[in-house]
Amino acid sequence: MNIDRLVALAVLGWAMLAAWPAQAADNTARSLAATCTGCHGTNGVSAGGIPTIAGLEQARIVTLLQEFRDGKRPSTVMQQHAKGYTDEQIELIAAWFAARK
Image (cartoon, rainbow, N blue to C red; front, side, top):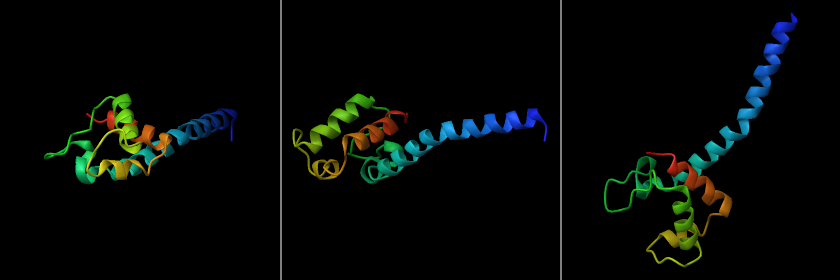
């Protein structure tokens, strides 16, 4: 094997390793967000009376979820859902839905 191939393989390996944490975070965010789609619709686009959350600003989603979780915002079911999330999970969920248009 020549040096050019070794360098190419090394670069490819580093690129794959660098991308892995982002891919893992996206998979985790997608899994967490999937629990929201039953009410808020596929990808957060509601087909009915539940608010659409796709495309909302990430900071707004974080604030809303934290307010539901902490009992500062009344709701019928969101307080129970949000209580199960850590701040890190809320950030992942918010980023995922904010990226949807």
